[in-house]
Image (cartoon, rainbow, N blue to C red; front, side, top):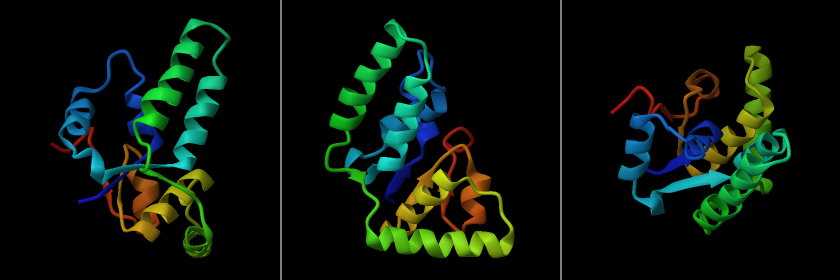
Length: 141
């Protein structure tokens, strides 16, 4: 199986004490089969820059720039015209269903849909509502 890691999964890596199941799952996955999106990079950078200036913010800036961006080099998926098309379709379906998926999640779902990936997330409900396959490493072994 090939995976698209949601922001909450990637952000476990910046915690001083990540959830053991998540850390174990990440360690067990073939890196060539794990991807992230530019949306996740934006969400992580936003979260980091909401922190006060100081050591922890600098530490997380370095973590994102080195561990994440360099670590996922060649496996960071962009928003391109086919992804935008998939997003438009998901937004239309979401509107018809009157679902409450967050726009960033819709972009992640569109990237997963276009690339035929399973979203790894703790936030399964919004992605399931959009018809995207999901896996929750907090719950499953």
